[in-house]
Length: 150
Image 1 (cartoon, rainbow, N blue to C red):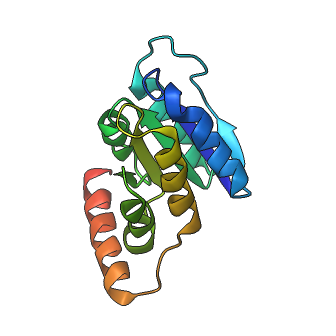
Image 2 (cartoon, helix red, strand yellow; image 1 turned 30 degrees about the horizontal axis):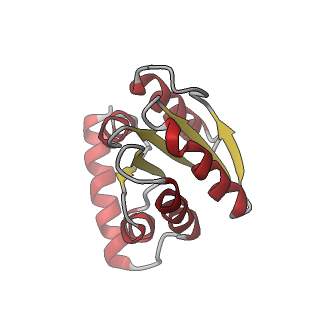
């Protein structure tokens, strides 16, 4: 898979660990910045990652800001992006398995590099489960998405 990664300055401290985890899992990285800890606005970078996902340039994404909340809100405003804020490995794989999450959001001021690697590994190792109740729930939120994103 090709994984898009984008972050702001507060996400920069764990970015190297995220990139290492993606590459260790055998995936290709599309790094859309930022590349320093100089202050920037997280919506600019989250939007870049969301656009790469929507266009098919990437298969999944990882976005990082200080808390993870800002990038999660931003990317969930984009049709076809299903972002989840995960600071633990269970949520990272369960969000894919049950909810078809395609964008992992994390807080660079919340998790350290070691945990970030574990979370990314769990996210990338998961796939949507072929279970009717999960498919039905996904169809329900996609219907809501269709109504509000005309």
